[in-house]
Structures are given as C-alpha cells and as structure tokens.
Image 1 (tube, one colour):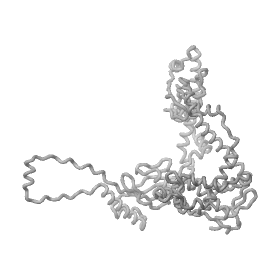
Image 2 (cartoon, rainbow, N blue to C red; image 1 turned 135 degrees about the horizontal axis):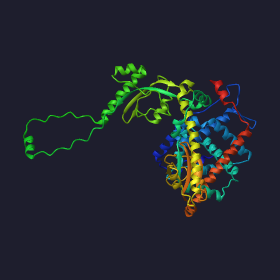
Image 3 (cartoon, rainbow, N blue to C red; image 1 turned 180 degrees about the horizontal axis):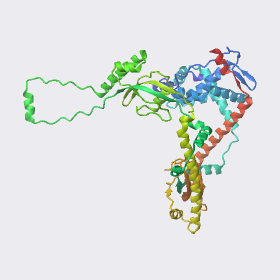
Image 4 (cartoon, one colour; image 1 turned 120 degrees about the vertical axis):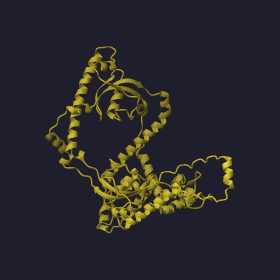
Length: 524
C-alpha cells in the first residue's frame, strides 16, 4: 500500500554510522509477546462488551511495545517493569475503539508524510529509505505493520485533538503562573527548634508502646543484604620519569671512552600493563568461584583476604568499597550465595557474593522500643515548640503595637529572640536551615505591606514566625517576552490532564475484562 516508502530514492550512499546508531538504540527489544487461547478462555478479554481475540491483542501489544522502544531505546529493559505494557495495550485499544466510533480516518498520504518527517529515518535532514528498511529489519517489524501502527498513532493524535479542542488557557492564568515562577521575596524569621525542648520531655513506657502500636509502619525495616567480597587493588599511578640531569662534559668524554657495553636496566611495566595483570588474576579467581562458590576456601588458596560489608540497605548504602549506586542496586537483585562477575572500580576489581539477605519487615516492639521512645520525645518536643512559638508571636505583636514604626528586628531584640534572614528567593528554592518547605514559602508569599507578620508556621525542622523584609515584583517587559511560550506550555499541560481524565472515563465505560493473567498461568 505504501510501497513508495520502501523503494530506493535519490539517496545512493548511506552513512552507515548513523544507521547503526539508530539501529542499536532500537535493537535487542524485538522479542515477541504471544499468548494463545490454550486455557479455558479463547480470547484475551472484552471491551465495550466485545470479545478481543489473542491475535488482535498481540498485534496492538506489539505496537505498544514498539512505541516504548522508540521512547526509551537502550533503557527499556530497565524501566519495562514500571510501564505495564499490558495495561497500555488495553488503553490503546479503548482509544482506537473511540476513534473508530467517531469515524476518524487517516489517509495514506498522512502516513507517508509522518514517516518522512521522522528524524529517525533521515540522513542530513532527508528521508532515507535504506535507513528506514534497516531499522525495521532490526526491529523485526514488517513495513506494512509499522505503517499501520503509524496510522493508529495518527488516529489517537486526532482523537486527542478533538477531545481537547475546548481546552483554553486564560491570559490572567498565564500572568499568575509567570508571577508565581518569577516573583522574589526576602524574609526575616524567628525560629523555634523542637531540639531545644527534648530535655524537658518525660515519657513513660505506656506512651512508648502505644505510639508503636499506632504507628507500626514507621518502623518498617527495608530489605538489607550482607556482602562478602574480594578486592584486587590497582597499583598507584606511576610518576612521570625523573628529569635527566646534565652532566659535566668531561664526564661525558670519560663515558664515551669506556669500552664496556652498558648494562640494560629492566624496564618497569606501565601502570596499565599492571592493571591488565590484575584484571586477569581477578578473572581467573572468578572462574574458580564458578566451579567452587565457597569464597573463603578459594580466597585462602589464592592468599586473598575476604572482606564483608555488614548489613546495609539501599536507603543507607555501604559506600566504603567505592561501588556505584547502580552496582549496589544490582546487588539487591542477586540471590543468597550468588557470585557476581568481576566488577571494576577506579581503585581496582571486586568480586562479590551475597552472604545474607533480610527481607523487609516490621520489627517487634522490643526491637523498636528505642526508636519509638525517640519518636514520642520528638512529638512532644514539637508540641512544646509550637506552644512557645505562639507565646513569642503574641509578645512580638505586643511590642510592634507599642511603636508606629513596627520594627520587627527591634521587637525581637527587646524580647531577646534571635532573628534569622533568608537570601532573596523565589518559590521552590532551597533555604538554609529551612530547606525546601512548602509551608514556609506559601506563608512567605502571602505576606503583604499591610500584613508583614505571619502566624506561627510549622515546618519539618521547627516553628517559625515570618516577617516580610523585601518583595521584588516581576519585570513586565520580561513577561511580555516569555508569555507566549509559557502559554503554550500551560496549554499543553492542561490538555494532557484533560485527556488523561477523558481516557479514564473511557476506560470506565469500556467495562474491561482481561483474561491475560489467567491464560498465562494456565499455559505454564
């Protein structure tokens, strides 16, 4: 049907480096996801009361997976477990059902135009049929199937356009959003820390146990592992050769007159050569461990010390061995006693073995007693801090009312309260001592020239009383330059949210019944 795309065009030469890069980024993900009706059901599910065959489901699933390949490339395997491609497939089928109901059609010329304009299939800004065919071969997708997938994509795009056509963004909303993103402020504040009152808190055993019973999930222990490992350290970098010294000419003459042949000194191998030897040794030990996974005995045979990390979690990883975050994450996927391949760090080569694993669990009260007691103390200290902050606020307002100047720093000084001041900041900015606190920042930007002092504001670190020092409004000229782009961004965000709600409503109307999981379990 669209054979014009598959014929050789004017491009006679192809920069295969470009093609290879594209192919690699799409490749290795073309495994089929095929289900059959071998179980009690002979169809994949139902939407809108209509039975969906396994063939129809698999066809749309492949298109859904193809979209994921195009979007994530090499990273697909890492994120595939988060994508739920089965659910996305049903969603795609539901949207296509709605498009058919609305009689949305896509012409062949529209498909051709979309493919020709796809940068993945272009060389030097022009569509290249050789790259197009090469990529489809590596994706294990027939050109006709790919083109029909493009047709479905364009149908959904038109459905999106129709469903969101009524969505608009008001200019005042654009202005308010620009203002929120760009206005700045500076605040002085009195800070009351709960830490100051911990020593004033007394708790009894009943309180501690009751807190544990009411908040057990606070004490949830994350999964933990203990790792034993061997380290093959790299040598330190060899220093640059020492500069040659200039010798006396007479000495040189004496040397030249010597008849004895100079003795060649044995050259020290380079650092990289030494590293290669260490890599070879590590690989040899790894091969031994594949035969005999008893790391203690293999290490003893090779005169190597076995080290252990002790139990650690991903929330509090052990960083002493210099392992990367990705490598630590991989360790948690390994099984007990499993040997990991030799892993290179800047300092050497490591071979790891999972010594012990602990699954996530909620500890019994006896194990959690100390943490529960500390939590009760912190809770009570926060209450005291809040009460004290309330007293400070009343006193500050009383001092301010004594003078028409309403001098906040002076009032605080009279009350012997310490004042802190933020830098000039806008929303979302990190602040010293406070951190990123939504409560603090919302209270700050609500202050005005008429009302410069806030009520008591509770943050994660303590209670605050805020005072407006300076307000820096937006520049109107800068807003005029940015408003069109911002309006487009806000409109896109609003349309996406609207279409998400639209798709959710369609999903409810579809009354989806899926038999995929049942069929898979019956076929195993």
